[in-house]
Amino acid sequence: MPDRRTTLACAAALAALSFSGLSAAQGKYPDQTVKLVVALPAGGSVDMIARALGQKLNASLGVPFIVDNRGGASGQIGMPVVAKAAPDGHTLAVSPASFLTTNKSVFKSLPYDPEADFTPVTRLVNQPMVLIVKDKQKYPSVAALVAAAKAKPGGITFASSGDGSPQHLGGLLFESRAKVKMLHVPYKGGALAINDTLAGTVDVMFAVMPEAVPHVASGKLHALGVMSPTRSPVMPQVPTMAEAGVADMNLSAWMALLAPAKTPRPIVDQLNRAVQAAFDPELKAKLAESGIEVATSSPEELQRLIASDIKLHAELVKSAGLVPQ
Image (cartoon, rainbow, N blue to C red):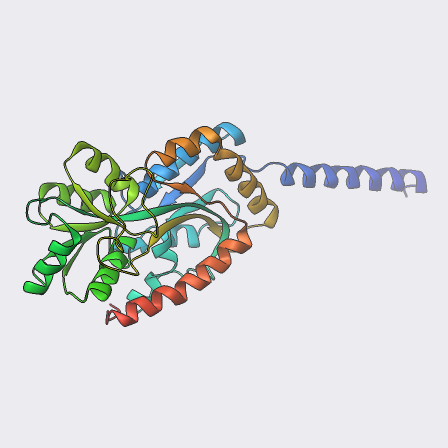
């Protein structure tokens, strides 16, 4: 029978071992490759932000952060991948606002719950939006576009990255404010939508700024109006929609980083701090060239933003008469 001294020594050794294991577990994250799921094809602005962020987090946290594109069905393929993943911080979502907000209004049911199935980490960026056209001769101004749309209801097409996307909302808002009717053409991502706008397959697009800037700068596409209260620093020559004759047309598209529900708070906080640091002056300046505004937040601020935008976008979809699919 072990004496008291032996028993105490064993207890102390076990306690030390347990504490060491606990400390190692707590300090171990991340200990393997982290997957950044983007529920859109490669090439769009969300993909671009995810890849820029992944490179920075790879350098600061010491493991690869790889982008996994799961495009299609307006986020309904990629978002469930994260929702169903282990809540250990190694599978994350870089998501546009629409997959977390508008989707609840434009679809009868979703294979994920935007609020219950995810743990908010931080908002990442805001993207102002701009109305662009291929044929400047046909649509030289917002007024000319409105006139053409009124002359032929449903005859003008507008591209988007999918049902409920920011580009789709932009079109709905334009229809509501200008009192016109156009034909929505959804794609499986912003890059595909831009490509067909460039080809002239569709007439117009309400694009997020990074998608539009290089093509407007090259002269391949033409910007008619920015959807913000003031002109954009990257397109100072382009009027606001209000200046162009359509009031109350302010809309921007934000992105966010999320983890699966029940991800431990220490992991969430570590990721939040790492993302805040990742957006250093160099990266902020690079993003600003494309019209992207860094807009990081606390997890609680992002949670409130998701809840408020779900209500706001539901009102917009309802007022547009859009029937959930």
